Image (tube, rainbow, N blue to C red):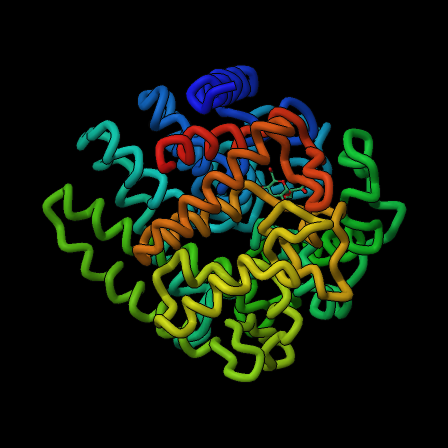
Length: 430
Ligand code: 9WN
């Protein structure tokens, strides 16, 4: 088959998936399992829709912002359907009536802020100043909230729950999670393992901790002080995504005739925090556990530690190190017995589990962040290589939530929205 026929096929499949997952009020992450509008999923979907249906893309972004809390936080899920077929659903989060909560049911935590970057891509494809006037001030409020409430002095952005990272059961959280309270096993009514084999999902023990943290957060209406949060974790991945989003927000303010000076200052401070997170011994950017006050050495083995490349926050020496790790067959890169990358955990790590969620499988969104980072650094050959590698993986195996690095087999949810959306974007970046 010629390349153009394959590309056309990918485009048609991706469009079909986004249409199939469209619930009108929002686009679900997949056909089953995730009945709600997730924060970074919605932003990534907006990027895909920018190429095929800009008005629908604008609707998706506006809907997500309808879930914004009065203090500026944009939640990790907006439960448009009020269903309990997801656990933990709106009845567990129970935000209704809390001070500052939106009228729609939502969660009390956030997720990586990709939205400004998505809207910049959308605006480049289909400018709409009236839309920017609505969304840019709202995103500014969200970024200000992160700056004010989730950063200790000039440190990394602090997450209060692994779900805020988007990379939930990454092994870098294991120690901090292990110290967190545990909910009763009986209080769990997991729905995810009805859809996906348990071996591909977080363990019961992980879920007991996830719920334990949720219950503690709920006691303070999800707004504990930084020093009181039971799980307080400085995340290089989240910080990198925010740093990039701040730059994109400045650009968007520019279209509205404003300087966006505050965003530029925040971006500088975030990039400086990333610089401080560089560890010369492991030659990696390391996360920081605020409860122990120590860097998390295990984060050196996780792919999110390469995201400063996406932020433009690495110097030439660090960039070279990142690119090397990305392709190194012993680390995150393809190898003879494991031809698909980038793995979410380094293959040499004792914590690498090729089929379990964020502990080894390949994810299209992580590859996309890295493609964007390589492009920004002017490493166009490397970017094209990773872009084509990702499209090849998707073309051979379908548009899944994540992929087995040895076989390329799709896992988790089939017909996954962000994989479809980012395929559309990668096709434009080839
Ligand atoms: C918890 C929707 C979300 C993604 C996350 C991914 C997964 C939820 C879950 O699904 O998380 O938020 O139930 O496992 O880890 O990145 O946004 O696709």
